[in-house]
Image 1 (tube, rainbow, N blue to C red):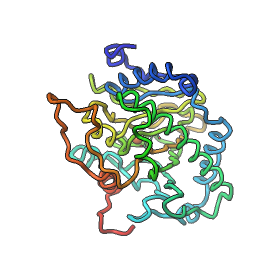
Image 2: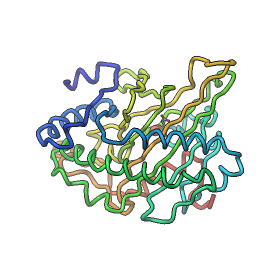
Image 3: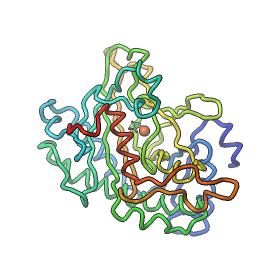
Length: 330
Ligand SMILES: O=C(O)CCC(=O)C(=O)O
Ligand SMILES: [Fe+2]
């Protein structure tokens, strides 16, 4: 697929990764395709990713179980500056605040709940008392996503004409976060100024997203500003770049705005269906200094951004979207 074909078509490209795990030639071809996608739409769907279906199903199932528990249990683990994970309740977050402050003020907060964990190697993970199977299922899913992210980093490195292992030492103490998002059902349509997730770009390197079959995820085509529906494909993941990767590549690659709209059709009893998705936010080592990737700058294209500690970049955005000040503890 050519650069122009991708930018013109209002579709999210699909890449089958199966052979890229074992065949170096395929890996190089896939990387070339990824480079084109990352310069244009910044989103793609992967199949042949090697994550077991049972693990995906268990993760969706145990998440639904958690979000159906009484609020008091869900609120057992609440995030803070030192522990930016745990439970976020309905209307606690407005992702567009971290993205575009001027127009987002009129938007109601996102109609969703979430629960997140960080990496086990940094600090003990805080779990709610129920469901009891949650820790083992989440840790298994987290490990699988990290393994997949390592393969994707290899493809991204080849796409940027770097050594395949260029990113390896930048993720040895990564701070990747796993977040389960639950968008409850509702009986009358959401107000026009409310979304399930308002428009935003992701903050980190890239995201591995699992969505259920309800749909609603949309990506903005930056060439004509149109919102493109991301199709729900069985046993697939959606991959999208975040702001850190865009800055790291000197804007050679884009982090594309996306949002989740409410369902347009009711199911039964006048109910608009709930939606469950699972996002794995791939974050590099928090102390890594993000400075223009060597292959992304030339004499004609100087580095645009000063070096920054990777976690400083992430925290700035996180605090903006949850309306927290850096000095507050909850
Ligand atoms: O739930 C989804 O499908 C997308 C969520 C999302 O974009 C995010 O949390 O960053
Ligand atoms: Fe996102």
